[in-house]
Amino acid sequence: MKQTAIDWMFSQLWDTPKDKFTWQSILKEAKKKEKKQIQDAYISGVFIVGFFNRESNSKQYYQETYEEK
Image 1 (cartoon, rainbow, N blue to C red):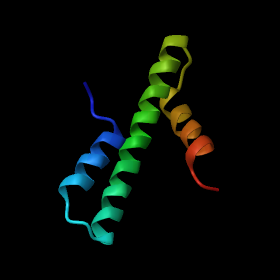
Image 2 (image 1 turned 90 degrees about the horizontal axis):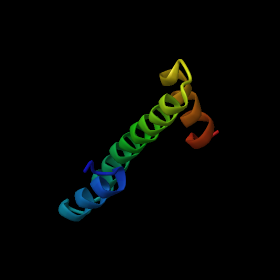
Image 3 (image 1 turned 90 degrees about the vertical axis):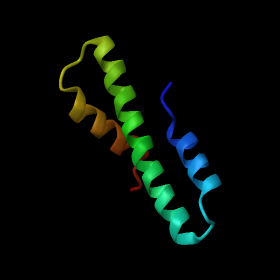
Image 4 (image 1 turned 60 degrees about the vertical axis):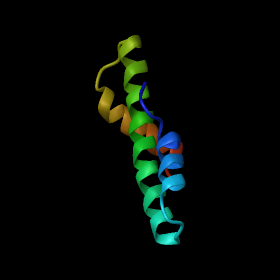
C-alpha cells in the first residue's frame, strides 16, 4: 500500500530532531506529496469517466480547490 502524505509527514516528524527549520522542510515536502496524490486521484477518477486532457485539468482542479488565493 502506498504511504499517504500525512503518514510520511508523521514518520518524518517522529524520527527527526525537533527544530523549526526541519519541521518546515518536512511540511513543505508533505504538501508536495499531498498535491501529487490529489492530482493522481483526480486523473484516475477522470479516466474512469472518460474525459480528455486529464493532467492539465487535475492541475487546474488542485489550484482552484486547494491553493491559497
